[in-house]
Length: 267
Image 1 (cartoon, rainbow, N blue to C red):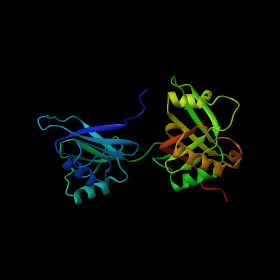
Image 2: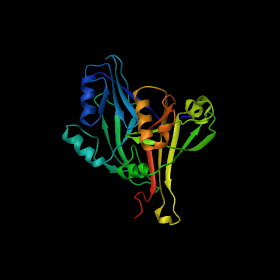
Image 3: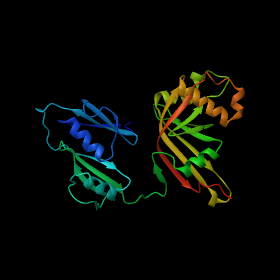
Image 4: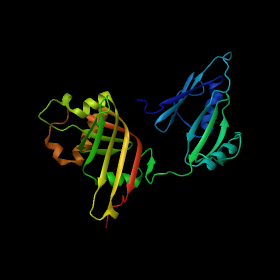
């Protein structure tokens, strides 16, 4: 099943000119640059790539890349200040977005947009906000949802530690082979996972939850593995008496956060 677009790669006849254009819009280079034949910019959880093409290779209008941004009008003003020439000022579209179009130096059409409103009442963003992070740190148990290659779901409670844009879950001591754990087998087959932490109260004005979604990696060794184990031992003193040093750690690379309800702790 197709889950998302990982990257879009555009051809350019002049890498230095193209890199300068995208940097002027605020794109952050993670590989390559003006003198490279391939450059990559990070866009949320994905990438925009540039690849140098020979001058004899030409292309006609091919379509459009649409980027969601935090503030369409602010980016439009920024583009004008940088000497760029959008096709028209921002406007509201009937399909529910505010947008403007801009072509890059090689003629690729770009659209910068923002939804005017969301039908759902939840909030979604790439990383946990401060209130979501505090909510997660105050929870002692979360629930990890995985699915195998066929989509068969599996849900279980887990202990966790949140660091930056990664949530770590260790595998504690169990009287079974670690390779036999269903969650590890599922991640090996299908790395898309979700973790939910919630607060329930009989007073429903105090309900709240945070859901993290992204791709999971299984760490078996290395600096990140060892540091994650140490963070988990600090957070859960019970783990200090367990021989977990050689056990794998699940690292959820957070790509999407959804939250609902009252995240602040009740007085």
